[in-house]
Image (cartoon, rainbow, N blue to C red; front, side, top):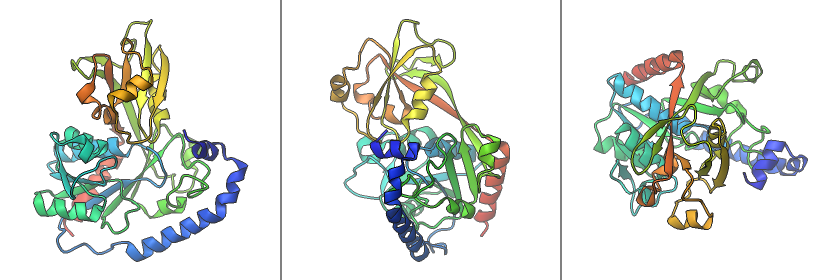
Length: 340
């Protein structure tokens, strides 16, 4: 956690000095949105677009949710396509089509993981509108999911789904830089669906805009060996009792990942890298990570370590559970948007 993130979390008093800049940031954001937001469906687009995003910095669980929704849509007979900015990737040209055989260094970790887990065509471009056009012109899809992009106002969308971290919520409630918010909390009044990632409480549901929110849960299921493919149930004691877990992450919110591992009856040592960090063998050597003790990482980070993975590298596999009411309502709204 960075110095500024700690200050946001602790609601440090000196952050009030940044409040005028936050007000300016909020005003500029509103102005950009009013001028850039695309409210008319482009002529080339005949399928609904659903944006899955958040209003705060850091990981909230958007990508696992998108993967789960894409898989659910496939079981319902839809043919989804997916667009992403391709964070962490550097391609020679855009838009870039991503599939399970793509180079993760070009595609970005999230886009590669989405393509591998869903089998859907994934197009990445720093300009999500260009990614959307590239997808539509090249692929036969009947619905598009956008990984993030809530603040990419030029991107046309039929529905907006926002994920809120049930632990951090909105931190101190300020917009950048005095707080972690990309947009004011009032933006939630305009989106179609709000999902709280984690357990809710009466206190949380009393927060403005969250009273009608649905919930999602991330359940750890297996630890999967990156070399052999061996699966061990997450529950109980998957390793010998005398071991130490080495948790390696390059996430927006690694604390949620670490907290999951701390459920196990082992000492957990954490090694935190910047979000979307591109791992190399040297990273593990310079951190003195013990090759005789298990190294555990998320699926998103694991895809960047395959070329040099060792037999002590394990991936935490999680499963997303969603409220059936949310799923049914979203599917119905997608069907309605498909007829417009």
